Image (cartoon, rainbow, N blue to C red):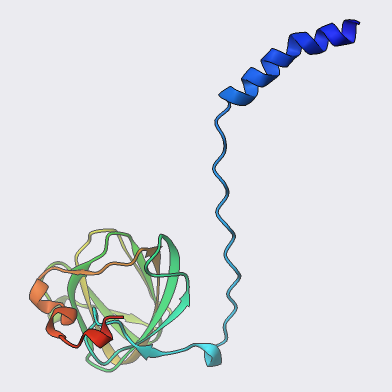
Length: 169
């Protein structure tokens, strides 16, 4: 009888505790591991937001969705990315060649800092910066999506110059 009374006395408290406790959000699914050798990287033209001539490969993530991503870019000698910014920070690792970076809203080749292979640049959100390749250059870009690149001068945006909508997939 005592056990029954104890259970009856505790039952309302247990029910109240369950209804007052906020439900935990469902955990995000764990992404599949990515293990990729250089021969498995699928290169293609860089998105139209970049000047023509560069190649790009998505290594991990989805650029259109929130979450981490890894992209690689190959650029020919002299390739320029005009002053721009991103809403999230980006980390650029130079894999080969020389990536030259500058900070500010106006492209000034005399202020570029040369980053040889194995160098890293971390650019905070909304910070104006620009770049140029010296020699054939490959970089890896790590960031958080969704990816967005906004040119300081909208006239520098190559995607606005391209009227072929087939490239805007």
